[in-house]
Length: 164
Image (cartoon, one colour):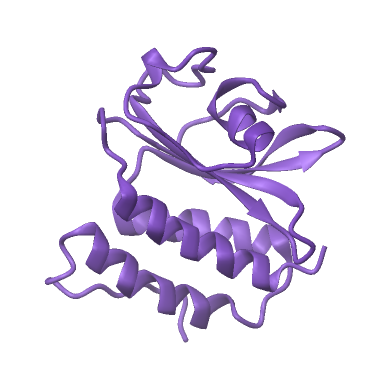
């Protein structure tokens, strides 16, 4: 497969877009086991497919989240467990959807343009959290169960392909 994404004009809603994106990501990355390569291309694909404000990964390193590959404006580089949406998702080991980041206790404002956010833990094959996928929108209430389901499939694909 070439390093391009293709979407039909009918894929205007997010459910259809995720349905088209996932097999393309798998074809592009199925033989890849380098985590940084996976993160980089997935972040780029999500940014291209949905035009989210910010898409990226924070990697677990020495008991903190450290900025990994991303697409969008510059970002916070280190996040402690329990801090902000990313740190809270890591601490609670759960997906967090925030309709309005200004109302999330302890939100870390890397950019004042971020209005809503979804964060998903990323696991290795041993079911340990190795990172979080962080997606921000510059629109309020921009994420739903559709995004949770679509992004969960992408995170599951990462877990199947990461060696560490």
